[in-house]
Amino acid sequence: MSETLHLKLPYLEAAQAQKHVTVNEAFSALDALVQLSVKSRALAAPPATPGDGDRYIVAASPTGAWAGAGGEVAAFADGAWCFFAPETGWRAYDEGAGEFVAYAGGAWAKEPSGASVSSPHGAATTLAILEGDHTIAAGSYNDTSFAIPDRAIVLGVTGRVLTAITGATSWNLGVAADAARYGNGIGVAADSTVIGPSGTPVTYWGATALRVSSVGGSFTGGKVRLAVHYLVLAGV
Image: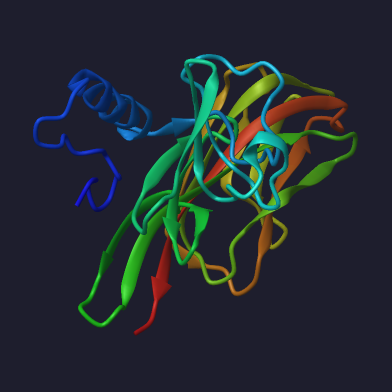
């Protein structure tokens, strides 16, 4: 056997000359793969001017120097690309998307945010957070483009004003069925916050947008960041 089983690091051979070359090759591979963080997983062709040490997860149907390396980790070192085929369970941080991804079933996929407990037969309860930014449009209320997931058991919603809200003296946070479920009279200045726990956990039977409603006048602008804190149940 001339290399390790999983990372394919080269072994030293008996009485091998230039041992430092083999050792340095193994060190370079470890440096590329341990604590893996990639610039992006959206590119199918290498960037024009990569930096030494830059790493990418190659997108589908790659071209150029990345041809044939779809799904692999491409690392640029000493002026050349090296490729590493992932195995099930590999994990990486996608710097461009700001999220962790894992390799399973022959593909990389975003890891769910949150913690999960599961039974021996696959039943699971996951604590998750859905976060999104919403630019406020003119009007008396806005519904967000992102939605509370179907069958989510919501513990509460939190938020922060990113850009001062104009046109209103305060605002409420909720859903169409209850416009102030997660907060009322919230400040409009930048960095104003809201922490809105559900009185009791609320289950949503269908994807449901959050609603921000104006108080004391109609919205004319602003931007907020909202986070839904919820549980997800999975059966056996």
